[in-house]
Amino acid sequence: MLLTIDVGNTQTVIGIFDGDELVEHWRVASVEDRTSDEWALLIGSFLEMADLSFSKQVTGVAISSGVPRVTQALRDMVERYFYFQPIVLGPGIKTGMPILYDNPKEVGADRIADAVAAFEMYGGPTIVVDFGTATVFDAISERGEYLGGAICPGIQVSAAALFQAAAGLRRVEFSAPRNVMGRSTAESLQSGIVFGTVGLVDGMIERFQEELGGDAVTIATGGLAEVVLPEVDADLRYEPWLTLRGLRIIYDRNVG
Image (cartoon, rainbow, N blue to C red; front, side):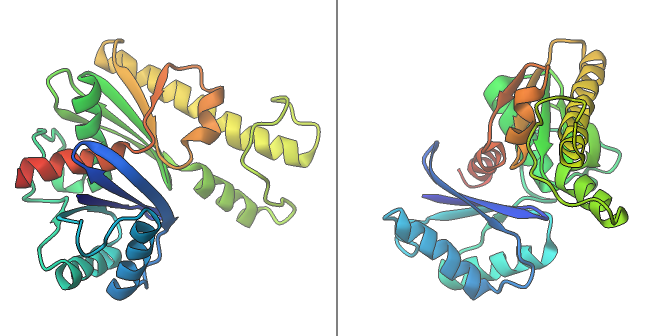
């Protein structure tokens, strides 16, 4: 079985594949100070809950990470407990996708994994919208080339900055209010946070579609996607585990 780990700045998503099938998945907070032994205990506990063996059934590990300290801890965990090297998405790893960026090394590993999975599943042209710490838009050409994208502040990041800067505003639940015109401070905040993000997403997708020719399949992923998707006008395919699926594809292209 293949263990896949996608480390974001806010959350880490863990999945286990049996062949092409994602059989289990979990989501935890990304803690930079977590040691390799703590990661082993955490992942081993998840696998045990699913009646899977940490030491006997995991035959490969693929990692996407934007947090260097966590990347190293996971490398150490794999080497100590599995006695082989993980596939860590980055320079030197075969993705099968040309990166048409001025400096390909600048593209985040999760963005590449998303793009690879999106093209494998839907072909091109394709747009991926990843709702995480940042709201990220990526474009893949008809020929399967990574073209570039846009990075916007994520829902939680934007809201946290607002609450920190405005002493009179209190945190609210991330859910759409009854009306766009809120009738209380809480509803007004929810309207601005949710519908403001909806406007951003619809507007950016429209602009991406224009540059791609207007017929691109658009895919949504990420931990905060479900907050926004019910309100978005654009036609979006929801793939919550897109990054993990990309890691599996890339692992197969490097290990076989």
